[in-house]
Length: 554
Image (cartoon, rainbow, N blue to C red):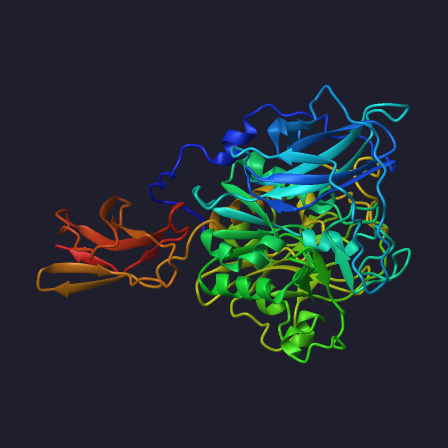
């Protein structure tokens, strides 16, 4: 699968937007201590550069807002983008009312807007951290946080990689106001939760299992942009504008429109990588213009259409393994620490492990995590050619886990880590209770950075960021000469092909490009030859070219 033995394709740009952005000066000042005497939320969690975002603050002390973009930035992790009202002035304390809500109603704060963050048109797509920084009293310098995700505008070149941010799951676990979607919340479970409220200290956080993937991608300079799963629901066809879609972190709560969009993306040749576990598990619906999540988590949902009931996707006939290749196996017992993956024999022989130093039986420490997925026995989930790269045997909790890859009929490759903490092996950032919401019980996030896994991920991304290869390369005689045929895939992102004539001694000659019929000039030197072909999209060519049968000249 890996690119080798032929001339490298030129990139569309010598530098990606990610490289340009991360060359700018960063700061570590965003890592401050949380304080409960200040809270805030934004009136939208996904936006475009240039949008004005209302912010709702409640604070016992004077404060200012600081807005950071999270990334690599030479290891500093963020760049300061704006301050409100400025970086040297502040605002008076503000008291807000709280809207009461029953278990059947959304937990909505209902606060008035205190501030507006005016994003700029040149702000790049990414995770944005909005901090309310206290400026007075003994707690000066402490903060509360909320998040904003900026997507890339359609009038700009679309990125090779799209990262989906799991904000639905953030809100599902958010118990601000007393209720979340879980019965361990202070006031029990609700069937509705709202985005219009602060995050409490039990909410899921991108600083647990998402930021490490972001830092790795941006450190490596990949052409990447970001959008929330709410954005995906609003425009499922957005997935088709990228070669690879990465589902980041713990993305448990999906809509039917999201699932339809991902199924269509795979069918169209879009590669997928699921970097966490327990993804695409619960079906939800939105209300209130996508500001409220509704799910009964049961087939008792009164919707008469069984395929739309807000239960597990497997309960409505669409198990997640049909898409991911693995499925969530259930709630496991709490563990004292991480669980280990072991490299399988097929994994050790796989091109994605080339140059990693990983051999069959080697251990990848601590990455499996508290929740994990495994190869499924569900009917229809046995994908032809699916390979298990890493495996955990379930010896500590009775539930195995698998990291797998399969190739769909479209040629799309689908990779699933099956492990909640796989991203920790990619980057060393670790939040603690002072800089992020509370650490989940039984999860110490102690998995070390593993250079072998980092190289594995580079290999995987080298393949996943490329289109499929031609299924065949045929050389046929026609009245006006020899013609090379490759056929054309249904993938509309394929803009052309490149065909080389390759002699057995390794000599390569470029003979055709583009979409026009390929009539290569005759070989003039004696030798045995083959034609080698690859498809090309807006970002590059296939990772493994296809070859014709050989012939000898003269």
